[in-house]
Image (tube, rainbow, N blue to C red):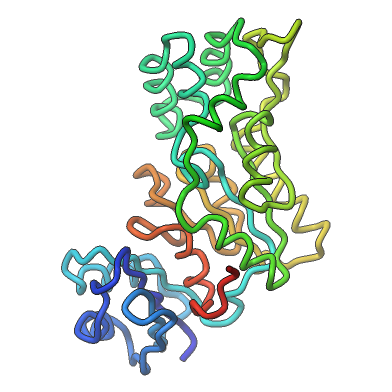
Length: 297
C-alpha cells in the first residue's frame, strides 16, 4: 500500500463504517482502515499509480461520500509527517482579517473588506490593494492592534493544538502573513509559533501614517520564507507543509511538500494539493497520520 486517503469529519458521527466502505469503493485495492480518532478521522491505505493526480482520487472519494461533511486528502504514505510548517494568519489561524477590523475604527470596514475579498480571490494585485487599504488607516493610534486583538480576534479552533503537537514532534513552525507585524508577533506567541513574518506599518508620534514599509511581504515573500527556512534547516522539499486561504498563499502552498488550502477561496482550493473545507485545524495533524492520542494538550 503506497498511498493513503485520510478522511476527516467536521463532527462526530458523520464518519462511520458505512462511509468508510463507500470511500474504499472509490480506491484501488484498498486495505483495512486505521482509525486516528474513532468517528472523526481515519486512514484508508490503498495501492495506486504514482502518476495519478491525488486530487482527482480525492474527488472520487468525495463523490462516493455523497455530500457528507468529510474532508478527504490523498497522498503518498511515505513521509507524511512534516518538519517545517508555514501558515497564513488572517482567515486561517484566526477567524478575521485584521485590516478589516482596523478599518472599522475609521468607518471604512465595508469598503476595505470588499477590496480584501477581491485581493484574496486573486482578482486584483495584492500589493497596490494593500497600499490603498493602509492609506485609509492614517491617523489611527499605534495601539489599535491591542484593542483589535482583545475585542475582535478569535483563534481558529484546533490551531494551538496543531502547532504545539508538531513542535512536540520536532517540527519548526512559522506564521507568515500579508498582514502586519503588530498582529503577527502577538498572535504567533498566543498560538505557539516559533517565529512570524509580516508587513510593517509606519508610525509617527504614536499614530499610523497610512503607509506600509517596502518591500511588501506578500505572495513572493511567503514562498521565499519557506525556501529560506527549508534551506536553513537542511530539509527536503517533501519535509514541508504550508496552509492558507487566499491568492497570496498560492506560491507558498505550491512550493511546499504538502500544500493545504484551508477553508479557502475557490482558486486556491482548486490549485492546492490538499484541501480542508469542513474540519478545524486539527485536520492538519490527521493528514500527517497523527492519532488523537498523540496530540499535545
